[in-house]
Length: 197
Image (tube, rainbow, N blue to C red; front, side):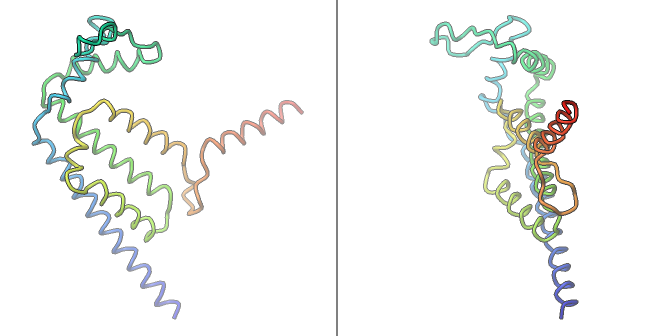
């Protein structure tokens, strides 16, 4: 009975979508509970190092035994990030803002991972199963509390996630996503060929 199989599959997909949504909400709640965590010294110490750029023009290290490495001028390609990071750290120096920055970054990371899973497959049951797996791994044990620590690798994680979201843009029609760089390269090569001919 093909009608019964389709109905059962649709009901199964709806149930899996509800479970995935519930897990997403629970993970977000556990990340918000991270606001109650104390601010640890390593969360503040790296901010001391990079926040001195606007005042000193160099990055300072906390270990004075390192010699010449304690006063390092950042590379030119890092200057925009150093200026931004130094200004934000000087402006939002309260420990509460340190924790809020970590929680917001963790929430954006989780939402980005869910968005990445959703753009890869539009089939309801399969996508929901992958979402459940990703959310279960992110919510295992104390990992939500580790995700809310304000660390220097959080912007790097967001940048990598953003580049993946841009590189694997789907067409939304259920077909496998063709990487955006391949689409851009084929478009560019066609334009170049037409310009030459």
